[in-house]
Image (tube, rainbow, N blue to C red):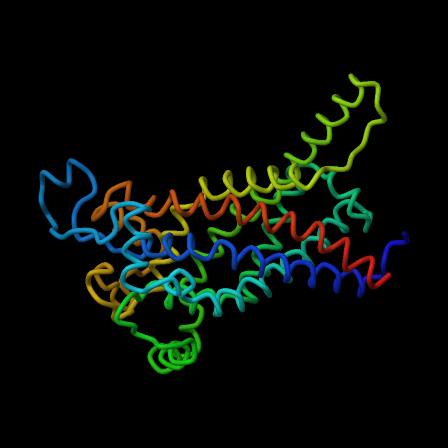
Length: 332
């Protein structure tokens, strides 16, 4: 099959990316809601034994574990509570993955000198990391307001501060102006550079390792070697890539969420209110979280975050690979 032209290739990547992102997001929404509740809970009590002895601050966390959080959300908000903020999340994720995979293919084509997808797997880890980072930055800037709205709607709990996405949007514009839609963009970009770079870089690395393993097994069994991967192998590569990226970058995600929920007048049982402009910059936010909540404060929601990121990455990559082939067969 001939390689499609540039416009067709961009259409294939954007369509496949959007569909893959939508499927992944809808499947993993409950885990994302739980993760955001943990990250957005501003701890009123110390989280280290040293701080506990000082007793500088008092209070009690609403969520103490994933199972308890799941039961509480279901009891107080019902099943729809696990998909709270899913509409703005889909509006964020689908253009995000569309832009990300389109830009990624362009960058890999430039770096490899070939537009063929099978040639991109042989890029060096450094070029895979840089391509993923730049693609992630472009996608973040293009879809960020929806990420902000999704976070606010998922963080508010009951009673609701905003009944729908429109009311949240209008309140942000009224209170903070247009720039309020990009609150927390700087820490998001700082987070996405290593996160997207690691995710795509390690995904390509795991794919190369799996291809080598397949060739090794084929040679031992006197079979013809193949570079094609099964859907299960692609799933495992995406699963491992999502786990690695999220484990490294989670503290930056916590800081980003704190910037995004500034000024949200939610019920105190969901965490202390983060006042508007509570953090002047990322460094000050990191210091304050460490001072008030200790190192565990930077890893709030790490378990649901990884449990969500791993299958989300796996589903996204597998869905993209198959959807891309299907769309390409339709348009060429």
